[in-house]
Length: 533
Image 1: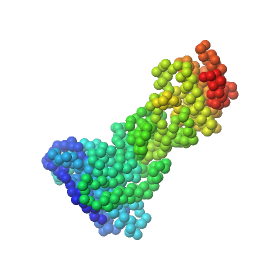
Image 2: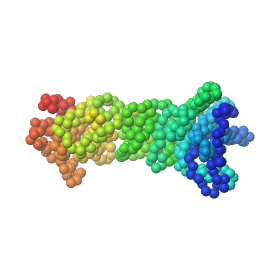
Image 3: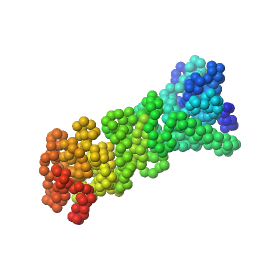
């Protein structure tokens, strides 16, 4: 089980020269930190006799230490199944500690894979989970000092990030997870695979990368088969991790296991999504946080709506969250927001959807200067989107300017189907007597807690249309209860004289008796077409 040998593996510096040997004052130093942990170590150890267990512990110790020492790192903390190592350079040397830290992680995985194969080949261990190594590598600032024993002690944010990346690697089924900045500092030595983003306890984000191989130095004499062997070890270790944890194959939705959620919580991890670079947080809703993100395959930015699974027990939150994807996945219409993906990642459920750089219609209305032609265009586009969702049996139930999004070209799309239901559902299904929807745009039947259908959205569109055409809401009240009463009993408001030709359209959208409303958005569009608008 000896590690791969190569002239490239010789250390270029020693950490000892960067620290005061007295160790009285810790020094803040930019270093690369490697945290590696062998999973299922205790299970295998407990299945062995005392003699074999002692030999196994020594072999694991060698495996975790040797790669670090070969690459000029020092062990800061060591436990039977894990190691924290520090890589640094002398002050007068060109920094290459990121290269060496990642290199050491790759070698450690190679050794761990060989050890796992030897253990798995023994009949008495055939029913045990496969040994796998997870590594986190991060370059950053930490406090380094020496204790009386001469051993280096490391503490600080960079150390904790390395530990967090090990948990991330474990949860995602990667062998080595590193921050994107650390891989960049390795000057091309580490091959990158999948990407993701993880938030830190302070809610800042770092981009992460899966390490899939080691690239040779320019002019290297190491045979190509060595590098392929290392890649294969990384692949084999990652596959074994996924088989052991029961993780779903890439591209398939899966619900994370309880241990994965517990590990994430124990690490202080707030947010982890594979396959996306999170650019920034752009909003917060009742159940979900909203982020702007870049998919690994590139293309236009996307919006991630992310809900922590711990919120799923609240008001059927997870069911409603997933339902948003299930409903919209049926549609492909220019006036309905596009949904790209719905999945689970560790302790979160998320939906990746279209990003609207121009924001929502509410912001556009606040800016003013919406002429009649533009207002009618928005009304017709909204009606077209409603027609599309009604055709597949969906009632939006919360139509308002905040849920109508604008693209760069000015086109409009329906979004936020978080409270949408199939037409057979009643509004009170979301809670005992709870009213769902925004009171300014709520239909009379919603206000009364009655069964809803497509005509509910037609009423809300009428309220929106009046506001777009006149610049003011049709009803104003001092309380939500009074406003709801007006939706049920107040007469349909009159449009100004210059828009009188549209009054019958308004009456057919906002009729208190839904039997007198447009039964479909298509009939509304036909009426507007006959009026030449």
